[in-house]
Structure formats: structure tokens, C-alpha cells
Image (cartoon, rainbow, N blue to C red):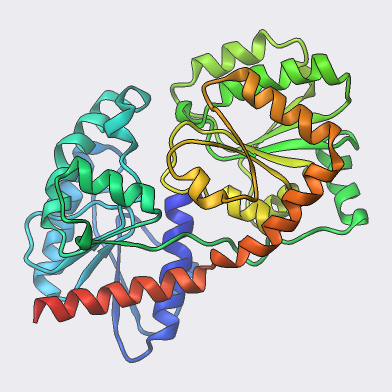
Length: 363
């Protein structure tokens, strides 16, 4: 699961368990797994068609979801990915994680970009309240859609408690498996253009030339349809054999790979939050993060901030962490102090508070 799915999983798991006095309908667009039916107060409903592209988004929300809502008449509809049905009067609360498509529409397929730009303003105006994951996104959404900021509540993401500091023996086993026993920088997310992997590869190559170190770079995540620049950058690298593409990793394996890393490199040029930053904090792994959008807000003083549009800035930060052990230790200590700001329990509690506020406003 990536960011939005991780958010939905942890919030819904906690809310349904914490509120046995309420009944919940979970609407699926395909056969569902029992692992997502967290408690006895959940009724799963599966309705077609599978919403795999924008035309089907429209059909599923405007007809299938609207039919379920209008028939069951729940008190509230919660959408963890921001999409709503415009054909229902049920009070709606979406989570709009960010509006990257307003800033970088070229990073998405044309049809998806068109859909988001056309319908999200409608969703934002229909919603009774909006949740988002950073103060940056709150300001961005309010400004883009001309909304009163009071309509938007910030609920930070968290990190799974399975992310933790590894002992030396545990870290050694992970490095033997993935990096031939060497230290490594790690990147975790889809290999999407806005994640800036192309510049990260250039920066790693440049750092290796200066450092003459055996350190490697692990890229953890699924490929993306439109990242030819990343592929080209990798092909042209001098040290491309020191880059390891692990593909998608899940659960304990992902936690271990982050926990054994020399440092996290998260240099996207646009993020609504950036969950891997917090996951690295929990693992006491130093962080290099971008100095734009939400990332300074999330990282605080627990990361080395860089200009994501500058290969030199990213490369210099990697080199500094390699050379300066005191800097690494300082970042780890600050992460220890900051990590507890971001917990899924807090996210779920704030989400529930927003539900109660919404229902009070509707009475």
C-alpha cells in the first residue's frame, strides 16, 4: 500500500474498533479481502464497476456509490482519497491529501489530470468539511478552490509502530540480502516523476565520484508508466551497478529495509505529507528531504533539507552525511524527539472529531 491506502487502512481500523456503538458500511469496487473487515460493526458492500480509470471513477461514484448512499442513508460519507459522489445529499467528508495535479498536471496521464482538475473543485465545494494531511495542503486547497480555511481540518499522517531501530545484527542481515553487505541510502515510494528519482540518481552518481565509497542506493517501490527520464538517467550513470531496484516491498520486509538504511533520501518536488519521512524517524535513520511544499513542516529540524531541483544540493547533502558522523547523530536525536508528533492513533482521533463536528453542523 502507498500513502493514501496506508492512511485509509490505519484510520479506519482504529475508528471502527474505537466506536463499537456505531455501524459502518465499507463500499468496495471489487471482491474484498477479509483483512479489511476490522470488526463486527462493519458491513462490506461490493458494487461494480471497478474504478480503474477516470471514466469508471465517474460511473462508480455517481451511480454505484450514490445508489448505496441513497438507499442506506448513512449519517455521513467518508472518502479517504478525496473523491465524492455529487448525486447524493449524504453529508460528505473527503481527505484531500494534496492537489499536485493543479501544479504539475503533466506528471499524470492526460485523462486523470483532466478529471482531477474538473471534479475536485466540485468535490471541495460539496464537502461539509475537508480533511488534509498538512498545513501546507490546507493553505493550498483553500487558495486553489477559494474556500474558507475554517472548513479544512489538518490531520497529520502517522507511521506504523513496526518501524523501529534495528540492532547491528538485524541490520547486517538486511544489508547482506539487498546491498551486498554495504551501507545504503534508501528511497521508498512509487517511481513517479514528481518523486524526483531522476535527480536523485544524478546526485548519487556525483556523490560517488567525490566520496569514492562503496555505499549503494536502494529504490523501493513500483515502476510508474511515465518515467522515461528516470530510466534514461539510470542508463547513463557511471555507478548504476550500485543502484538496487527492489520493486514493491511490504510489511516487515519494508520496515527492515528502512531500519537498516544509512539514510533516507526523500527529495520529491511536491508532497502533501511524505509518510516515509516519519517512518525513517521511527527507525532512527537520518533523513535528507526537500525544502519545498509540506516536507519542511513534517521533517522539522530532524532532516537535512535540500533543493529538489538542484542535483548539487542533493549530492552535497549525501556527501555531508557520509563525512560527518556528528551531523548524523544530531539528526537521529532530533528525530527521536519529533517522531511522536505523528501517530495513527492521533490521526484517527482527529478524524473522528471532524466527523462529530460535521454532524453537529448538519443538525
